[in-house]
Image (cartoon, rainbow, N blue to C red):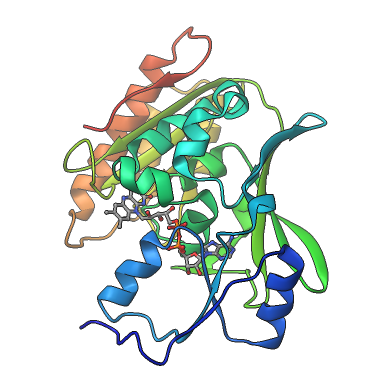
Length: 284
Ligand SMILES: Cc1cc2nc3c(=O)[nH]c(=O)nc-3n(C[C@H](O)[C@H](O)[C@H](O)COP(=O)(O)OP(=O)(O)OC[C@H]3O[C@@H](n4cnc5c(N)ncnc54)[C@H](O)[C@@H]3O)c2cc1C
């Protein structure tokens, strides 16, 4: 069922300060970034929101830069911005690989990294990258700013510590060593929601994160520990199969997801054997 357009309110702030004041004083407001998720919810009548805050004029929240040695990505950076950014390509190539797999060019031109995070779908393609990179989110409100480790942001299915009066302003990633790897498995190579998505870093302490196998994106500490301890790949894959608890849904079965996750771990490990730099692969 479609939502009616009449009776809706749209606020169009020109500064971050004004946006934060509106969020505080005119609550409840739903922020709009690229609108690629909100529009679908609106179209299907699954949002009860009646008042919206258009963030699109807040150029300050779209900047990508390196501050000190930290990569700072404005929440309004689109996937196309990420793909074009030299700083992102150099420091976080697995995020570029993920951005290239999101939707098609139209969605990449509009959809934002902040929107992917705030929307909180467990299938969000950028989320395993941020979990593996141990990113930090900069959250802002009229009261000030706070930093939340990405791994502490989600509290459950599409639930997070983000308050209604807060915006995600930026995503920060400190430098880290290791070969970065990303793989999305969907029905086809474009315009497909992930059945399983994985981002990983091959380092002395390997780290990897999976999407679409739990209510939120997950890191897998037992599997990571098995790999770090030098256990054979087959043993790490056995640990992984026990560590995740995927569900059956319209896109896939739990058994299929578990097997794909095990296969992805194998692919990651073999692809990055003795490798230097980034290894990215297309969806399959
Ligand atoms: C055809 C199609 C294909 C798609 N393909 C993929 C895909 O392959 N992979 C994938 O991961 N996703 C995909 N998506 C989903 C969507 O494009 C992404 O999640 C995108 O990153 C959302 O960003 P947005 O800027 O459009 O968010 P919006 O729709 O504007 O907002 C999404 C949510 O985040 C909130 N929000 C947005 N920005 C902020 C902020 N800065 N601070 C606080 N809250 C905020 C909004 O209030 C809303 O609740 C697809 C969507 C469509 C329609």
